[in-house]
Length: 170
Image 1 (tube, one colour):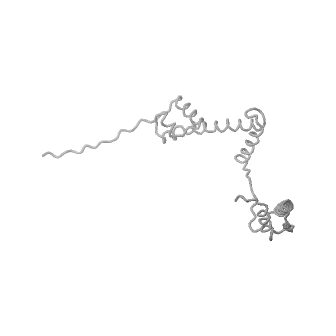
Image 2 (cartoon, helix red, strand yellow; image 1 turned 30 degrees about the vertical axis):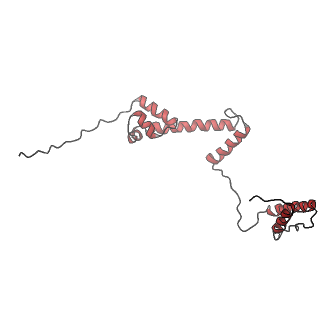
Image 3 (cartoon, rainbow, N blue to C red; image 1 turned 30 degrees about the horizontal axis):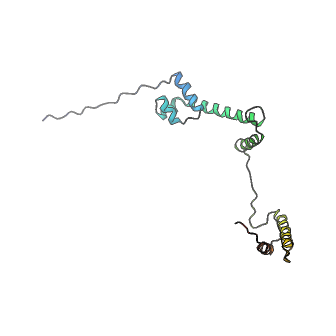
């Protein structure tokens, strides 16, 4: 038998990719519309890494143009220069803009272990309502006046609700 010769094959170098002006326009347009890079690469007929390498400027320009158009629409709408004319929608849009572009945020006060400053007022109003309910029913039990604390108020209030036949959804 004859020994088989090992033939060494060398890969031929790939030709360098040269983007055409039409491809550049198409990439920018698709990026402006928000198309994902995988989709754009498929539409152009190239790999995603080739797209990123040769069309980085077009991808960035398309995304920036889209942001500019949306921002212009939002600001024009908020300021009453066209776009959305509904006042509530414009207010909602202004809140959205303030949160996303200006760094504003909604905050709530969460006090743990302390009564909220409005708690006393709310308890007093609730006590007055319990008193009125008891008076309507002809009952003699009335909730004690709130003096800043809730000691006993809830028990008396629940007793009054029970006497009047009211229920609490919980």
